[in-house]
Image (cartoon, rainbow, N blue to C red; front, side):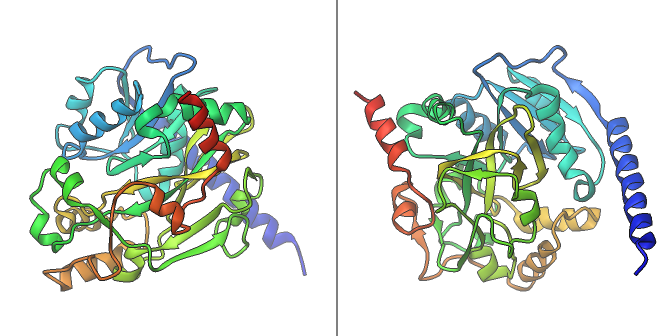
Length: 346
């Protein structure tokens, strides 16, 4: 069989990628934070945002309490007061890129790491996420970073935990985000599917091939309550915290970075996707034609068809902390990290 058609395809793909990156570079608009830089030892939070006013106050409260002082925002075309309100915060830089998220998300996530986060720890978070880990309340990020650096790890894995209320979603759509953080106290991990980290059954396994693991127990997880209720085959696993050093490729995919050494335990990301008027929010995204994931259409159909839809069932559990997630096997615990934290208390 002639290799010519294959070669032509590769050449065409390469030209398309060059054109895509050129278009992205031309679309980046710097809005705020002239001279922004992240001092050594600080962690840079990288955040994609569009019309994020609903989340901002509680978002900053949580991550500043975590120890984050520097934030790099990529605004994807906000029409509310998001940009103005971020400008009023200390330690923030804002770049705007008004291109389709579905086609340019990788470059939007890579840009802040490459521009502001070289040789720095970078924490990828979305506005509706709370990154949490063993020892957070007692020690915060500094102890976690010390542990990772002591092992020469350059990434930490986290599993997303979808949070929801006992009440139907429509009944809580008018809650503020701060109120939703209290009301959304339940989760359901009864239908999570798990795969070995380097399993060839993972669609993007080739992107993970260059990563090494601190524990063979680490897994990629899919589905969960969104799969159960909406039929979404969503990936629950991310590499939210990475050290963007030499050879590391930050965020070529929304859920991972490449050429990293992953530490020996999991963190958790509490996800509040269904806070606020999720039906209206998803309808607006659908109207824009910019849904990044095909399964979102299935969710929209279910939300439209069931006025009193609830994620609650007899499988739901109430959030009481991170330990039950270790006990259930949803997260991997590290005796080494637990010992490190205990010794830090003495």
